[in-house]
Length: 373
Image (cartoon, rainbow, N blue to C red; front, side, top):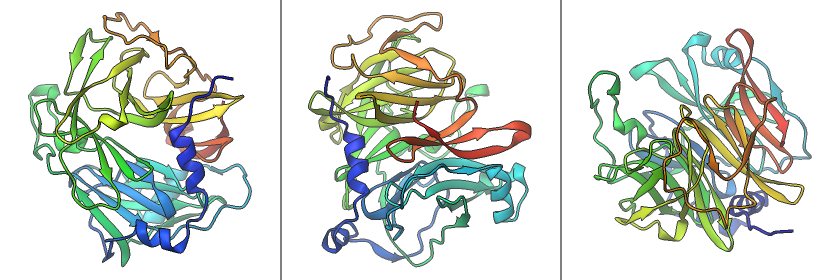
């Protein structure tokens, strides 16, 4: 069997073991006690000892929150909450059409599912953190008088609408597009105020000083050009050979590999495009898992379903450096999981199951676990 070490899998397994008291104290070193303030919430990611990282793109900041959610889950069982958007509306005292689920993350220790929820729409929306336990019970997570630490991005885009017509956007809202924890670093994707604005960061944790990010460049086969301004939409850490890499998915849909060791402040880095997965598509969430002795990526997308991507050829695949036209595919092979329809968010629940947010009938959204395909 060909062996490829799995950074994310190893990290998740390590997180499932309760750390010693001295280690827990190290991870929370420098945290202050109080109530963190958010303008927005999402993406989410778990680190060690139940520490939840919450991105606040409007503030261009990330909060590390000591949730104290460190009791190991007993056994493994399916999870299903039908109409979770309706239940969230009831919990938050509003209408279903005033609820937006912005992000989801599973605590690998307790297997509680955390949701970043907007109560309301537009600039007046209030961000709320909600927890769903393995029995399907919902509760708001109080952020009053908690231990937390803040990392502010020093090179975030200016907060304000730019462009004209249908190209108007506020780049500050994409200052953080995805986050993930690896060993002792928080990996962050998004936009900066640099000329090459697509940016990756490896921020040491516990937070101390936050430096400028690494500007990244990719060849986008579907567009037939090099790009430096399109942000990473979702990523996973993954060892290729013996070297930790960040596998990043972009809109329209290149999959690109970056050596994590090269994520240095102020540097410029060119990625290796290992797959073109089809245009007119936006990736949402990606996980890595092992089944039958092989490693796979599972990528949820806006318009191309959930892709199961084989990593067997990841060490030998050639970098894509020529146009891939007309919605064509090239590089790492994949299959579309036809039975996984309407998936808006995706995360690993345990070694055998994923948890998804799935759009059902009549506007209903279900939270449910599914066996990894």
